[in-house]
Image (cartoon, rainbow, N blue to C red; front, side, top):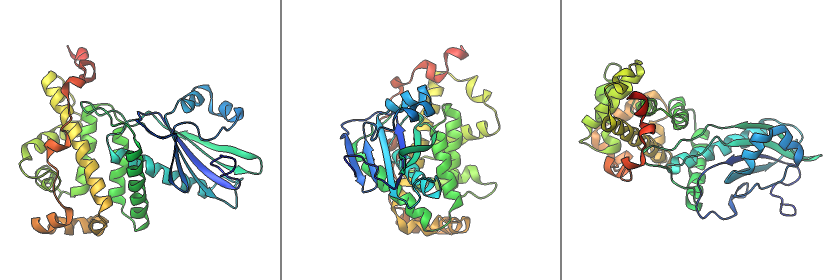
Length: 336
């Protein structure tokens, strides 16, 4: 670090600016030698980059609450190349870690890629990531020092998971989870979260509805078949574009129940990922479809020994509050 500048000469960087809710964050937190979290822009890029970003994006960048900066030395600091993209990928894994560490919500984060080259610090690429919307009835957890540290641990687990071998199915499920957190319409969220769970349980063709209820016992325990069946029914209505069956006959109580289902499913998927990523003994069973088939062919006792204790549904959404949901969010005024 040179004169307090977190980007040193002949280093490349990736920077993500997040507009979110934070509590008691230190002004600067070194999560690793190459990763800094800051509550203010960690470096001034000068006026030219603000013109390049545009006034609105530059203003959004400046009013962000959290800045994540990752750096690495480079022999080619004046060239935008794979080194920048690798830094960006690792930082994206940190964003995913924030989503898995808790019920985090944020506006679309901006990212900058660049380097400290022969002409000083310069920005070579700009863009934005998907937002993560508030979970209705739950709200959002504030980002704290503890959640940042947990997100970093999860990001390291994602990196290790990717280095250890190909796993297109689970990686696709993780991308779908991130994309679903950007969705607003609750039935669509249920549809996609159910698809995420299907990615974990690998149901047999023609037995998806039944196994969706039975195999999820591993995650949330027995006694929830009716609940999981109702969720799967919503998933099927959306899958076949029968939205009217969900909207037209439903009142406030029915819509709150659908909203509760979305909160439950988000928590199930999130805890499945944190369990899988933290338990390397599970990794060989989730690499391929064949490995998953072998996992679900084990006895209940053997699967439970590998996976660990289930988390009861009541614990997953103990803080769900229907009074936090407005009628407008439920879509009631437009349907009266």
